[in-house]
Length: 149
Image 1: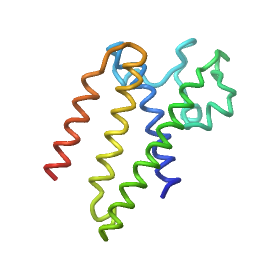
Image 2: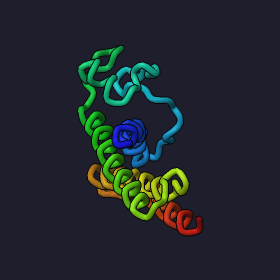
Image 3: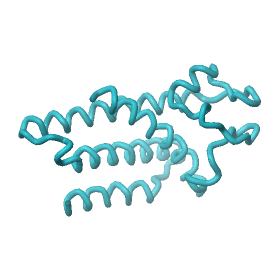
């Protein structure tokens, strides 16, 4: 389970990189699709495999060979580790109460969403000294929805 949570976290971390870059600039996190900021070439699925692609390409763009910050790689590892630790903790607490996380996945989903929002809030604040209201609102709605569930 730890490995599955880590892999999920790495994938989510890849998306959080997009959020951290685009939210402070007022850009959509959906459009345009992922692209190299240097040559503006749209990245292919093979270029977007969390952790693997950047390591395989030596932290360079496949198309123009410009350098890609290792921060993206670090963010994917960080999110993977935090997902694995937080998720394992929730699953362990539920198991102690004889509750399967599959019978009630809401606490697990809640903690993973809150961790994701906190990562975005921290890094956007670190870079720009602002807090994206969308991430804060999503975190608040997560709490309300979980409580209502």
